[in-house]
Amino acid sequence: MQVICGARASAGFTLVEVAIILLIVGLLILSVAKGQQLIGNARVREFLAQQDAVEQAVLAFESPLPRTPGRLRRGKHHNRL
Image (cartoon, rainbow, N blue to C red; front, side, top):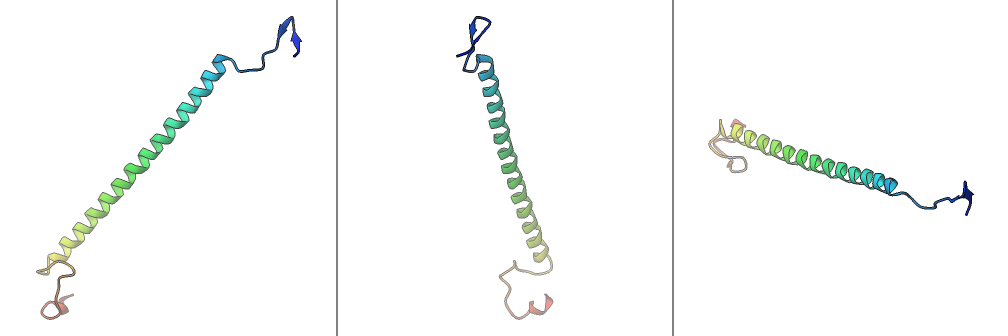
């Protein structure tokens, strides 16, 4: 070990340095968790928008025809499509 002005040089980290590192790591973990939450919320919003679009498409299809999609028979309403 080197002696500097009559004192030993320390080889470890101080308590303040360790606290700062733990603070930075904690902030990184929180930001990753928040990012994952935002991605999950975006997926839910996209799913609900797609569900709404499908519902509107079915309602638009039912408007001129008496049946829902997939339940039409060949015959009377076949040529109206």
